[in-house]
Length: 153
Image 1 (cartoon, helix red, strand yellow):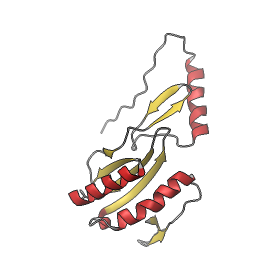
Image 2: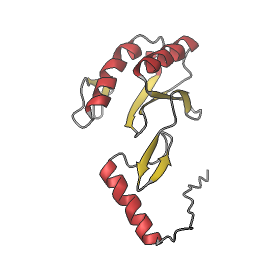
Image 3: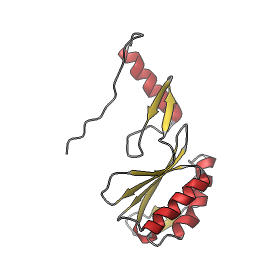
């Protein structure tokens, strides 16, 4: 588990990330033995760790569909860590295997998201962006807003 070296296929080992908060670094360290024990470890793509307000999220992308034993091992691991686990297998849509749907609390609003959504993970910047948008909207007490993304493809 690590980062791919520039212009090479080598993986640079990572055991601790200085920009992750400590709970996510701890989760990262605990995840390594689980991933190393998977039959399909060679089809693992990349990993995202997200510190939502209500849960820690592990989002794992694979190049192909994992064997059921691997899915079960990951589910059991996530259950012991009390985190939310998503799998992105091949071209399939992300699947939440275990845990609660993540959200952030910003400007008195609960912002739910999925791991493949664009989110600003820096809480201060996220707060500033939402506050700026609310200022620009100049909402009245009974106004309602809808935030949506249209994908065409």
